[in-house]
Every structure is written in C-alpha cells, then in structure tokens.
Image (cartoon, rainbow, N blue to C red; front, side, top):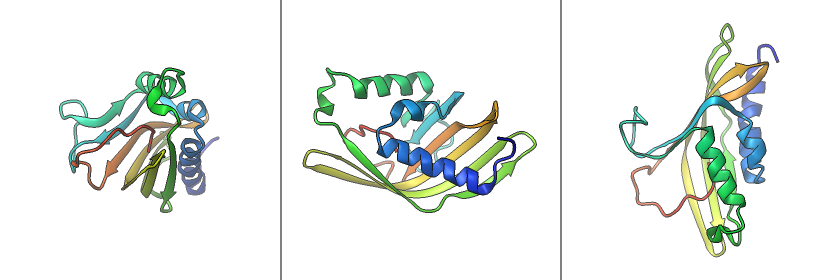
Length: 160
C-alpha cells in the first residue's frame, strides 16, 4: 500500500471492529504497530495516560496477555465466553499526512458486551491514530473515550 485513500482508512476501522466482534483477537493484535497503544481514559478530556489513571492503557505486550487470558482454560470468568457487538457511525478522517504516512480518524460508536444474562451498553468515541509501516496500516494509538468514563464500571472483558 502506498498512500491509502480515505475509503481505505475507513475500511480499516470498520474491519478492526468486526475482528473484535468475531473474537479474531490474534489477527486484531497484528493491526498494532510495535510501539502501539490502546488507551481508555478514566477522566473526561484526559490528556495524559501515564501520570493520570486510566481504565486501560496497554501496549502490545499487555494486549497479548489479555488475549491469552481470554483464551485460557482456567479463565472461569469467560465460561461461557463474553460476546460483543460494535455499532459504528461512519468514521471520519480528521487529518492525513501522506508524506510521513500518518492518519487520524474519529468514530462515534455504541458497543454492547454480553455474558449470560447480563448485557451492558457503552457509548463513546474512538480515535485511531494510524501509521503506514512497511506498506501496511498499523494502529499507533487507539483511544476510546466513553461518554460516562468516570462512572463506576464492572469488568470490561473485551476490547471496544
């Protein structure tokens, strides 16, 4: 891939959500750059994931550990397994710099996570910072801002 079109960038975000809905976590991990991060802020308008607590702030190693935990035979919180469903508004490309292969997208979403008789709805905005590495798009940062980020949550089992 040389310079992705806006349609390519939007398709990347939609494909990523489908991977999560279909529990294709190993494949999903390959979407992250080696220095990529998955961030879910704890505070409205939070600007620092390191010096301020977050719901999640994970690099590829921590994401891999979570994926391995989800697959584990001794992960009793996942018997039966949680399921999820993303409903995305059409992603918009906020900025693009083809010269360096740097792209920013914004996607409002609703996300449902369910296990047994419990179903939880989350609403928020995903911001993808994508980079072009070795001819492929990779996630440098996926930031998930929940509308009610400062609410008391139960366990969020999967990835939004």
